[in-house]
Image (cartoon, rainbow, N blue to C red; front, top):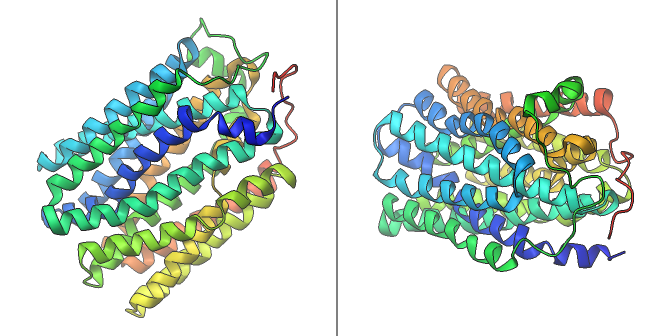
Length: 404
């Protein structure tokens, strides 16, 4: 039986490094894309629709990706997803029409959903329950570390070389993730007994016996992702509203991302040692409190208070690193692992539409501060649902005869 440290070491090349590469690019887009849409003269509500299109693509792409993973290799889907993410990111710099931007963002979302699902399935099939929280928290931590670099790099590139260069660099960085993935040749961790079957039937048929569980669990991921995505939109928009430069807005987002990094190792430890709720509930509530504080900071027109509120949101988000991946993995039926995770991903990724749309609609009708309050309220409801409807999931059995 391999130690937790050895298991995690073997996940570096096939899982963590490709995620880091894509996440740097994704982090670059957090401040750059809203600023690009503003520079193009696109209204706040249309900008919300464009930013939310990534969620539409993610929601539509989840089930097909799950069906393909069930029949083929997780790594084959990972390679295709990296190519899609890279192309859809690089082409943003030459797209000006609203429909073209929506299409590119939808393709980006589909690729991102497939990438996450392939890595989640990879870990779920190979890592036992009492190590899984740390393994999946490291995915969240890796993406958070990359988000610290991405916003700063994106903001500086816009100021120095323009939007086209920023999007091109983001696409190239995503492609760099192929190198460790291909060199790892799929990794050396074997699939656990009971989780190595390939599906020969339809995805919907595999999901039919589990639809009640799917809907009950799916409430939390969709609301949490809506809150996270809403935060990624409202924070740079508030920075822009305070008349900060692109570099300063990137720095504002990066400071919040840096706060994410403070607690992601704690997240995995808490979930594996004490239970999943010990990581999730404090995470969601800290994020909600931070968003409420962000609304007050915006009303006070204070850059310092906005930074502090962003840090609080970041700390909460860091404490929940990998929690949604772990939640889905804990309850996924062994006979339909990738299919169930695809179903969860489809529900979850619709939050990528909901969050930016709430920011756009509420921001247009009321204010950016009201938008922050609205997405904070989603996280409060998610916490209540998790605590009283779902409960603890770490007691789910691990398939027998795991080889590590």
